[in-house]
Amino acid sequence: MRVLGIETSCDETGVAIFDTAANAGQGVLLADALYSQIAMHAEYGGVVPELASRDHTRKLLPLISEVLIQAGLSRRDLDGIAYTAGPGLVGALMVGASTAHGMARALGIPVLGVHHMEGHLLAPMLEEQAPEFPFVALLVSGGHTQLVAVEGLGRYRLLGESVDDAAGEAFDKAAKMLDLAYPGGPQVAKLAESGEASRFRFPRPMTDRPGLDFSFSGLKTHTLTAIRKLEAAGELDEQARADVARAFEEAVVDTLVIKCRRALDQTGLKRLVVAGGVSANQRLRERLDHETAKRGARAFYPRGRFCTDNGAMIAYVGAQRLAAGERDQPGIMQAVPRWPLDRLSVPAAVA
Ligand code: ATP
Ligand code: MG
Ligand code: FE
Image (tube, rainbow, N blue to C red; front, side, top):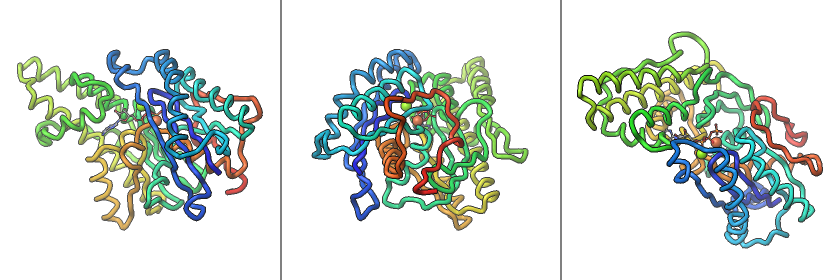
C-alpha cells in the first residue's frame, strides 16, 4: 500500500510517501520533502498561527508534486492518504486535513487522520535498526515531554509527563534570554559547547522524589536569575553566556536521563526510544547511549531530520493504520488541537 503522508500541525510543511509492501513487506520510505517556515517566524520570536496556516496553503500542493516526482509515481498510484489530525494549531491542521480529504475523494482512496505524537514516537521505525515492541519512549519536543510504555501500535501507557513547560519549550525560552534566535534548542546546544560545565549548577527539577513527571519552568527562572546577576556584575560576556547555556543544557539532559533510567527500572524494559525535536540533542544522545549500555539496554533515535516535524513519520504511521483497515468516516475531516496520546485506537488487525 502506497500512502501519502501530510504534516501541517505547526511550522513545518512535511510530505512523504511510504510503501508498506516494498522490502519484503517491511516497507520503504519512497520519498520525503519538507518546507520549514522557521525563517518567517524567527522574525517574531515564535510561531504566528495565522501566518503558519497561510504558508502551509502555499507550500503543500507543490510539495505533494515534488514527492510524487521523487518516487516516480503519479497521483493515481497512491492507495491512501494520511494527515496529522492533531494535536497542533487548528488552522494549520485544517490545511492538511482538507487537502487530504479533497485529494482522497477525487482519487477514490481511503484517508485517515493520525496523531502527531504517535508519528514522533514511531519515527525510529524508519531507521535500518528499528526497535521492536515493547519499549519505553521518551517524547521530547516543542510541546511535549512524556515517558510512555509502548506495547504495540496504539498501545501507549503514559508513565509521566511535564507538569508545566516541555523540554523543547524550555530550550526555546532559555535561548530567548540568551539573545539567540528561534528555535533555540540547536542554538543553545551550540553555545553550550564552549561553556564551562562547572561554573554554574542548575537544579534537576523533581528528581529528588519518586515518580516520572517533569517540571522545566523553574529552570527558566533559574536561567534568568543567573543572567541578571552576571549582567548586574558587568560579567555577561560571551564566555559567561556559554557557561549559562552549558549549565542549562546539563540540567535538562541530566533530568531527562535520570527519569529514563527510572522508567527502564520500573518497567523492566531494555529498549528506549527517544523522539521529538530535543532527541536531536547530541549531549542527550551521548548520555543515554552510555546509560543504556551500562544496563544492557539500548537507545533508538530517528535520524536527525526526522527528530523534528516531518511528513515521513506521518506517512509511516498512517500506512500502518490504513493497511490495518482504519479510515476516517467519509467526508469527515479531523482537526483536533488537544488529543491525549493514550486514547488512541488499537487497529483490529494488530490487536
Ligand atoms: P510537538 O511535537 O510537541 O507538537 P513541535 O512539533 O513544535 O512540538 P518538534 O518539531 O518535534 O516540536 O521539535 C522542536 C523543538 O525541538 C524546539 O523546541 C527546538 O528548540 C527543539 N530542538 C531541536 N533541536 C534541538 C537540539 N539539538 N537540542 C535541544 N533542543 C532541540
Ligand atoms: Mg517545528
Ligand atoms: Fe512535533
